[in-house]
Amino acid sequence: MISGPVSQVAKEGDTVTFTAQASHPTATVKYQWLKNGNKITGATTNMLVKSGLKLTDAGTDTIELTTNSSTARRAAT
Image (cartoon, rainbow, N blue to C red; front, side, top):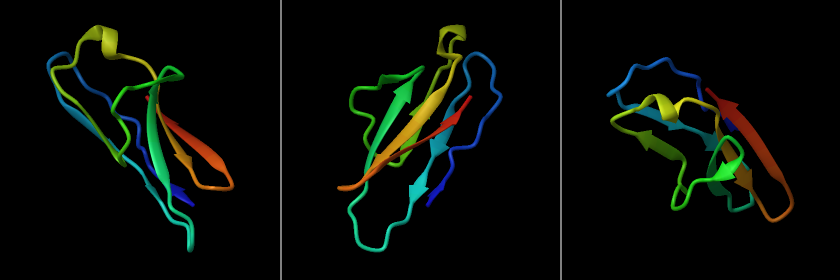
């Protein structure tokens, strides 16, 4: 089961924080954030903070959660 992330509206210069949480009774969950489908280097926790936003930051941020047996994705804009 995945909760989050929630879409947000922001203006240039703002900071946004996306969070996601997975629950699985027995598996270790690995997190990977993606920007418009591409992995964000180093973004491998359940939280993504984007500071000093620019117009070029607009798009879709997706969390990819992987266990030893499955992968799931949820997106926010």
